[in-house]
Length: 279
Ligand code: C2E
Ligand code: MG
Ligand code: MG
Ligand code: MG
Image (tube, rainbow, N blue to C red):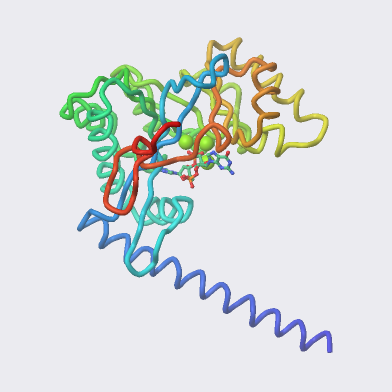
């Protein structure tokens, strides 16, 4: 009967919820141990290229990877979320920053962008410690860009705003990530000084198929340029994406079509892209 089916659905739903809850608990437990012990995290790097010359990589975005002996590879969307809600993002964030700094040092003169969670920026003194850690590794702030999502715009928190502007005072450039997915207030964009706007991959032409897509992109690019911001388009998966976004006037491109996130330096069982022999 309909009623029995419905109760089945309820039970199914409930067990799925509990599974998700267990999932969270398992991730949190393992994450806590991994953050304390270190060694399970690695950074991958995805090229960001000039739209005028796609063979030219201007910087790399650092993306965290976690491989756990019992959970396997956990996606950053999952473990960063758990880290944020459990407070583990603070020690984890410092650990990831150190990994990036080590890699930047060995790359010499590379530029890199790094993702920072709102929970990190809510910590008074974050910008100062960030700058100190980067300096301790012998890296110039001009080599490092900080990416924050629209979540910081939504929170509109005074500590976040202060820490962000202090990062900028220290010489780090600021990028607003995943632009267009939340509700960005243009007012906030003018109050907070960003250097770069990253248009979310849901706007890339191959994904965003309706006829308003191109016009929406065009106006975002117009707005950003009028405000003196550089624009990176994310999620470039096809040559058509490249052509359309270049014609619209986007400055930089990032996506699987141009390069996947990869470990830049060789580690056991993880061959480096630099090791691949060029034909
Ligand atoms: P994000 O900062 O917006 O990073 C871009 C995401 O899009 C990455 O997913 C990247 O692998 C993926 N991507 C790049 N090109 C393409 C493409 O052409 N098509 C598709 N479908 N996807 C593409 P990833 O590495 O799974 O990271 C997911 C999110 O997790 C990041 O989104 C970021 O918000 C967060 N995250 C990753 N690493 C860190 C970190 O070190 N710290 C913090 N706080 N957050 C991080
Ligand atoms: Mg990002
Ligand atoms: Mg993004
Ligand atoms: Mg994202």
